[in-house]
Image (cartoon, rainbow, N blue to C red):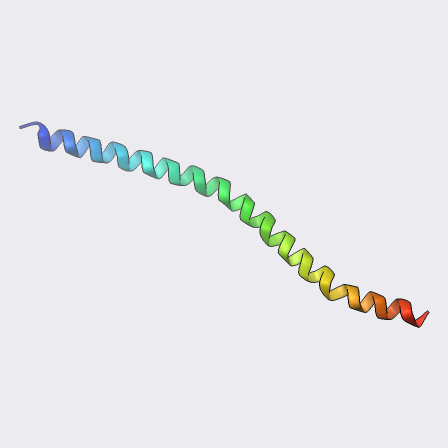
Length: 60
């Protein structure tokens, strides 16, 4: 008679463990994605401004 109780306990335990691991991975991935996003936006801004600066330098 204790098999269903044991299986329920095991499923709750592993569900809790999986949720903890997912929370850890999410907390590690979020800052990494922010850095990648900032680098991408910075690159786009620099690539957009460089032609304008070269045109400005040609005039003088």
